[in-house]
Image 1 (tube, protein in one colour):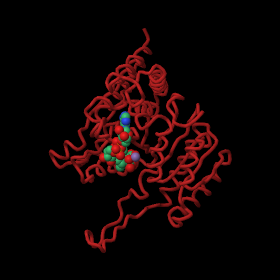
Image 2 (cartoon, helix red, strand yellow):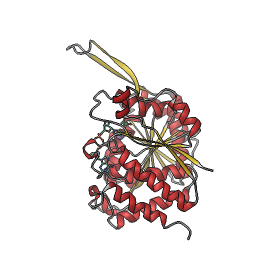
Image 3 (cartoon, rainbow, N blue to C red):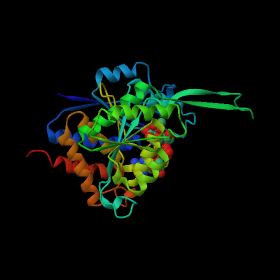
Image 4 (cartoon, rainbow, N blue to C red):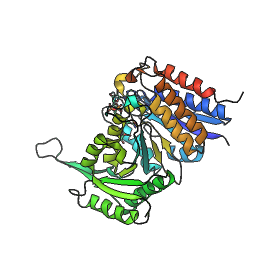
Length: 353
Ligand code: NAD
Ligand code: IPM
Ligand code: MN
């Protein structure tokens, strides 16, 4: 069956890295004998500045009706200081499509890439709640712009939202045959909201007797991740901590240029995007590392049931690192498009003669 992919390149380096991800997808699909149809959507700063449109009306229905997955680049442009359009697009998709599980693997693909001493293996996954928490946009300003200003930003934690993400983390651990699930919060201070997380974690973990469940505070988790990441297999946490800690995770494995992610709705359409943003200083220079986007494409393939082709992409990425065929952020000399061409050539080699 033909796979129908919506491609949303977005802003900054988004289009540059997404182009290479699509190149890798085409090469892997062709070698594996699969058909892909790509439809590009021009949502982002350019269109917003031109037409005042962020996420067009009806976009969510079109996505659900016409696509099997969404491949997303990045959003954010310094020409639009009011980042409302960014929230409307990115959070609009995450919330609107109920992409509640943000899966962010942290895997070391080459030992030279980690700043940690004597670490050969780093392999764990963040499962970040992706539809509520401090991202819900609840709050307001009172007496704005005066010395008496009050600014409120509410954190939303629902039983349904917390239960389903924690359950997702345990199911994920079972499916990956790993033994440990950690949950990180600040229930020592945020007694109401994170107290709920703590109670639900105890309740859900009791249903998974074969998985070791442990709780730790998010500040301690930041320390433990740097000290010894081998303590972790699956880490489930809320929206904001997941955002911050996943950049820390990227730092452990070679930087944001290497970090993939999936925004998953287990019962519907899912969206795949690298962890990094639009990196304005790198944009338009053909120097951004495409591997984060390319490995994101591999996650998408696996999600679509093409695990063999996903594995090909991952091993091409590993080879590029071993052979130094990388962009300058990793010490190589290739441009974004050259790095993508190198990977595509590797992938083409899987085609049957
Ligand atoms: P960023 O992720 O764009 O960049 C952070 C750092 O990582 C920079 O030093 C950048 O040069 C480097 N980097 C990022 N991607 C790289 C790549 N592919 N190759 C090499 N180096 C790379 O984060 P930022 O600078 O905080 O944010 C820039 C804009 O992107 C902001 O508007 C922000 O809101 C937005 N953003 C969007 C997303 C998204 O669309 N999912 C994610 C994060 C940030
Ligand atoms: C990410 C980004 C986004 C987030 C921003 C751009 C809204 O940092 O995907 O990690 O905070 O979720
Ligand atoms: Mn982030």
